Image 1 (cartoon, rainbow, N blue to C red):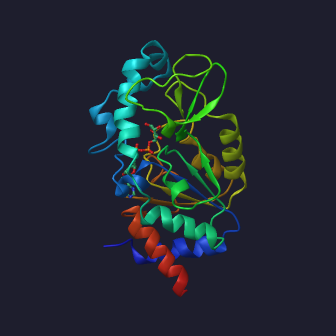
Image 2: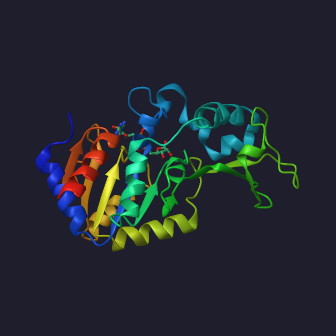
Image 3: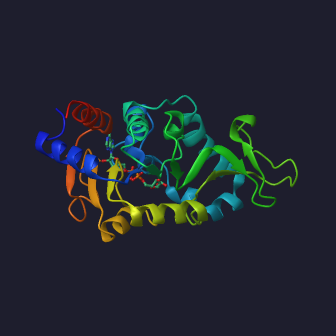
Length: 249
Ligand code: APR
């Protein structure tokens, strides 16, 4: 069962009218690729304590932290592929309907599905970084079953994604806020809207006068506050329906 047809038609109308549309994605868009979300049934934070992903804990206990990071991020992500939702967004960008994707996800799936203008607000899991010399390295060049060390500084490398308690990369934050101020339409896909400062971005767009479409299986923090069109269902199913509706109308 797809989205409500009248809501789908409203969403497609807004998408066609908008001269600047930005997508804001969360873990929900990758669930159909087999990547667990963080909250809700099977959520990672139902199984692991998020406090272990505080930046202070990482530097105090790099071995323990790396063992867990490798297990629940790198091991899980290494064989995951984009799903129809990621490819639909790449297609919508190619057709000129969306200008950029701001993603909270570190799974690289937007990158792998061919989207071009991606802002990885929480960083990514492709690279590791040395916090002392600032050098970046490909995660795939290391055996992550032991703590990867900087070859120059001989201190533990950190995954290049944002830990709790860490700042958002400056460029990602500035570009995201500028896009959210300028855009006419935001499509929020698969996020609970619970984690700040990322969660603030759609609010900023709404305050700046943008229309908001949300695709989610359940209500989120946004649904009854800022959303103009709520499309209930799975991201891949609904985005495919949007592509069909665009093609035929
Ligand atoms: N299609 C659409 N939405 C879905 C699907 C699906 N197939 N499956 C799940 N969802 C929705 C859930 O209903 C939920 O609202 O995706 C959302 C996932 O929420 P979270 O697990 O909280 O993920 P997210 O919002 O991305 O978390 C934000 O929290 O832990 C931090 O840094 C981490 O980036 C993450 C941030």
